[in-house]
Image (tube, rainbow, N blue to C red; front, side, top):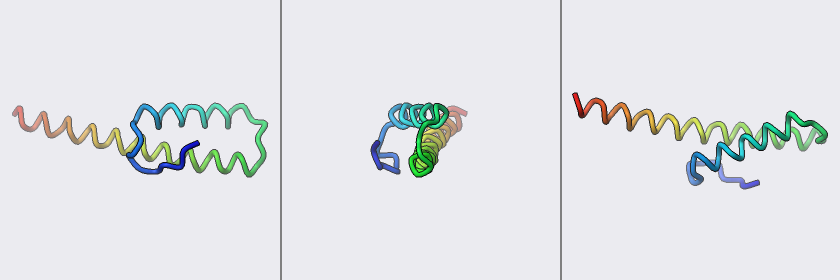
Length: 68
């Protein structure tokens, strides 16, 4: 798993990795330490995804304002 924690990775890549993290956590069978590491990575990926979505919303809002 990549340790990138900023918007250096595309939204789609962060989302796919987040899906995989959730899948692994839901499947179980990992140690407590592995689960904690996955959880922490999932939190970082969720933050990255939210940042991308917030940026997209800002751009859309600006485009709408310019059209008015």
